[in-house]
Structures are given as structure tokens and as C-alpha cells.
Image 1 (tube, helix red, strand yellow):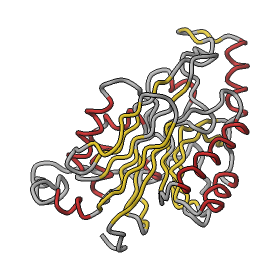
Image 2: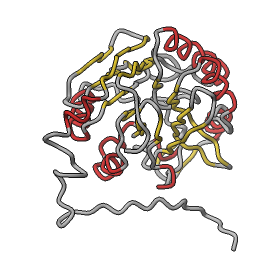
Image 3: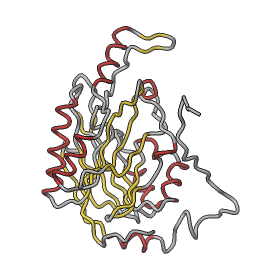
Image 4: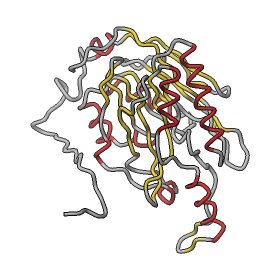
Length: 295
């Protein structure tokens, strides 16, 4: 697939929560867990969905059908104020610890928020980003819809990294778009803490013949509702290498034997010898979609 990768890669999945309404405190926690992952010898650390900016589980922002409240508008403005409008602080953390980071964040772009994942190289370079293409249920009141321009895979010395955010993992076409780009390190930042998440992750690892690294928040009950984790690392044949973690915050560490991907592709490659392009084809629109274009 082009760039030669390492034979064994040590990875970390971070199970931790952000600090509600406090992005500065969450950035400090981001630095703490990146340092912990680097100290454990990890070359890559994957953080949960919306780790920076937060996931306000349980809040309704004063919305009912056809109505919004002034209190809800104020809460949205407060939430938007904590979103990221740049990546300088994230890049500094990656460079300080010399580690690849996959960082879930709420991104502010103009008047719209996006649920985003940043891929940060050990020198602090932003190697790529993903915007969630389909926020789930009430999330659509808070976040905009990403387009296909960020639906890419990042080639790195560790392997080809891609991300599907939370319930994007239930979108077969999106998964296939990542498989078609040769994803090897399939990152699944989430806040889905249900028991059904583990079989979903195992299915994807087996379907895509890739390593799956799923980081879920662990958030105690308070002003925002509790999120109880379930982070996991899985190999290309569906074997659970670490997790699911249910006992609070912490790191999952695993050494990935990258040759297992080729072994797994012996009898299944859904975009190669196990595909039927004469019957089925997926067309992916990778063009940026903008509300205003200047000619």
C-alpha cells in the first residue's frame, strides 16, 4: 500500500472523560494521558469522541419540536465557546511527547460546530482530520454534517490510519470507503458505552481485516450524564487484545503484529478478491461542500 510500515506497533487507547464546560482543564487532561501513553512506550494514542469540548450527555438544550428556550440558547453558546477553533495546543502536546495522537474534539468553524477527529504526528504536524458525517439524533441540533473531503486515510510509518466516529461505524458505505483506502489502524472514538458496542467492533475488525482501536469516554454522573467506557483493542481476526474496560479511567496497551493483517486477508478482502465489482460499486464524493462559493 505504498509506505512501508513497522512490523510491531505499540498502541494505547485512552479511556477518560473531558471536564464539562472547561476546555482548558480538558486540554490538561489531554496532555496527561498523552504523556502516560508515551511513558508506556506507545507510538500511537487514540482518544475518545469529543474529548476536547465535551459530550454533554443528557442535556436537552431547551429544545422541543418547534420551540427553543433562552436558557437553551445560552447553554449552546457556552458549549460553543469551549469548542476548538485551532489545533496549536493539540500539536504542542503531540510534539512534546513525540507520539502519534488521534484526538476527538468539538471543532468550531464559523457559526457551526463539528464533531471532529484530528490525526497529529509526533512532530506536531496535523496529518489529517475527520468530521463526523452524520451526527446521531439530538447531536444534529449541536453539530453540523461533515462532507466527503475529510473521509480519508492517513499513511504513516505505523500503518494507514482512519477513523469512524461513534455511530458512523453503523454506516456500511462509510466503512467500505475506509476499507477501500487500505485502512490498517481503524480508530473508533465513541461515547457509546453499551454492551452492543463490543460485537460491533469485533465485526468491523473481521470485516475490514484491520486492527480496531476504540476509545470511549468514562464520565462520572454530574451536570452531564455518566458514560461508562467499554474501550477495546481488537485484531484483524476479531480477537480482543485489550479490554473492554469498564472500571473507570485508564489506558489500554497492546502490541500489534502488523503482519496479522496480511494473514487475515488470505480468505477475506472485501475490496479485493471477496468483492464483486460487477454487481456492487460504491462511489464516494470527496469534494468539499460549501454554502457559499466564489467564482
